[in-house]
Amino acid sequence: VLAVEDGMRVGLGTGSTVRWLLLALAERGARDLRCVATSVATEELARDLGLPIEPFDALNRLDLAIDGADQIAPDGWIVKGGGGAHTREKIVAAAADRFIVIADETKVVSSLSAPIPVELLPFGLGATLAALAPTVLRADAPLSPDGGVIADFGGDVSDPALIAAMLSGTPGVVDHGLFAPELTAEIVVASVERGVERRTLR
Ligand code: A5P
Image (cartoon, rainbow, N blue to C red; front, top):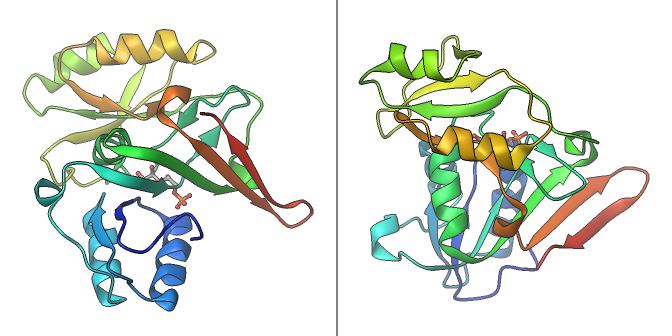
């Protein structure tokens, strides 16, 4: 919350960790913030809390984006999309001068592992799934707000850059949940034993 200064254009991520951020921001007061949300759930919660949400098109560039993570590797690679919101989350993160990841210690891993969330175009879905094998549709996941189908890649991710390139290079993939270290400015991890630890990546 301290990173959010008055008047900033802020991208708000999605998930249970971000919920705490929204509560803290609302408690502090909106202070001329201009916010965009990465999901309908975040938009609704933010509005309920009195935080102003604007269409992304009204802002385009952001000073800051803050979001949670499903996995955080030692080299700064991150997996997101447990809630299926990774496509919008990545667009918002990339549009921000600084992208800050917030998480508790359970998200810190020694190396990334499957599943890696992917969002796929409905057109040619069978062909895309075959090209991405082993990838399975996520049971009971609704379409994304942009009409994408949420699935999970189940293969080896010991080389995240290679897998990210493979996923991005497969026709029919809208986007995937691997976030490269270059995207992230800072990772903030909270744990009961060690308190809050901040790691600056760039
Ligand atoms: C949403 O699609 C995800 O990328 C979330 O940001 C991520 O799963 C973290 O969520 P939690 O804070 O709920 O664990």
